[in-house]
Length: 285
Image 1 (spheres, rainbow, N blue to C red):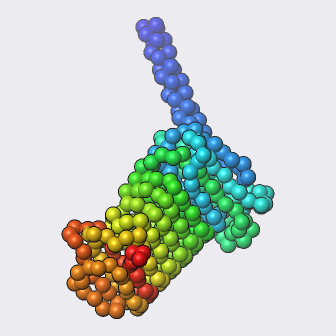
Image 2 (spheres, rainbow, N blue to C red; image 1 turned 30 degrees about the vertical axis):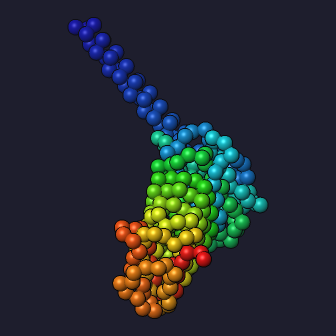
Image 3 (cartoon, one colour; image 1 turned 60 degrees about the vertical axis):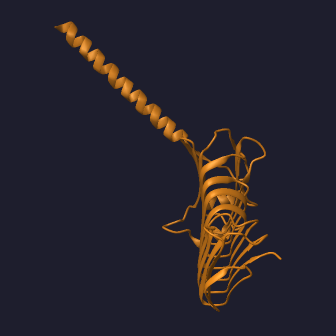
């Protein structure tokens, strides 16, 4: 009887140790997955990522290609001590996903203006290997975003205040959202959706192959392509402003503030809705 109790106690003790060890291991892995970034120092990662998320309060974000098969992260500033004082910055690796986060320390709940004033020249650079990613998400509260040559099945770029530029990028779907500031898409393939409250929208594609949808409250919208498409549908309208196109379409509706019609059959649709601002869709002559 004594031996049975002794064996049972030993077994129970072993289980407790095993669980405790596993818990410690999990905690260690979780803790190790979040790593700080250092100002003016490049961090190199050899992990292969399928998803990338970048969220930053510094006034400039640059996303582009790495020169090799590593991911490179850096925060560049002329005053690293001041940046360290006003911002927290780190990255996290979780199951094939990379998250890069930069936040003002006085952010409660939104970014404090003094943080921006003290570190206005800071830049976040994320360089990714030349792969096609499942998804890439980039968000900025204040400042410009420049995104170039990184292909993704789904790309989402958003800003509260600042300019957004996306160039030379292949996607299945690109969603770009801005509240205040200009938006420019240059040679971005895939289905495209752009929403901008206040600011111009300029889109260039070599050819119209996929649907393009633009919605803006205040600002001019220009969509340009190299040649006139054989098949295309247009649905353009603004409350205040002129609408124009040099596409030779069969028009179902036309006025100074709207154009609707199509050329060919079952072509991609270009749909633009604006409250205030002119709209122009054209091919280069």
